[in-house]
Picture 1 (cartoon, helix red, strand yellow):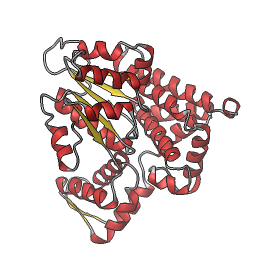
Picture 2 (cartoon, helix red, strand yellow):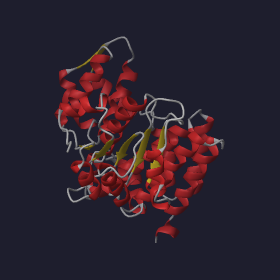
Picture 3 (cartoon, one colour):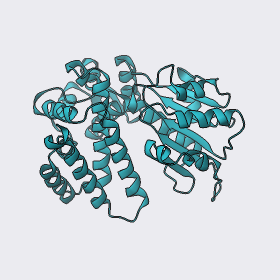
Length: 344
């Protein structure tokens, strides 16, 4: 039974023991789940996106093919190196839990290692229990960072970039970093890019400038139009972004981030306080647009939207189809699904 905590988690992620074959990373902080899964995957495979040694599976893959996970874990490396299977789930998964239990019992082969990203699994979860009970499996919980943790994360990043944080800016920065780990890192990176690489101090003026000059505004317009059920507006904003040099992959990832925010908003109660904790817009028209999208994508529907966005990114990376067409088709598909006529 391996349930690492504190500093032992970082050590496990960066240098996973060879005898550990299964890692279930779960918790309410979806950004931290993804970050830890990426660090661990890189430690295992070197390149987490290597098409030869890395296999990605989703909820739909496992539901549609009961042998998909077993086949992927039994496959041997064609090019040498460590094999890795990455599974992203939106909830508990009995098939994955069953595979882990059978692997621990010695009836399932594992040529590679398995990294599972899941949501907030309860103690009664079959998947969590299978990982916690196994001798060659680890269950890694990802809970919300508090303000002190987030400021420490920011200062560590600033220090590596030759920057420091002004004392009077600490409290304001804690408010900006509210939300999950992924969103916090995004804000930290914006500040570092804004300050450049000549060193210096991050001040209140810098925080104000970043809050009004977000480079994600154009992507937000596309994503909000799609998730609010406005196909025409989504297509128009998408074309403008492409003409300005935006990457289809960046747009799909912005879509994924917004979907994660909506799901987290619902999980946290769907009220005003949940906006801040989900890392969503909190004031004015952006907050109104977010809440409109959240009404269209209820808690029961949002998981399907995530699967669609995830499959689109995977298709862009693996197929010969134009990335622009795949991303555009996904935006229109979600916009039609979210239109008032379809959600009544």
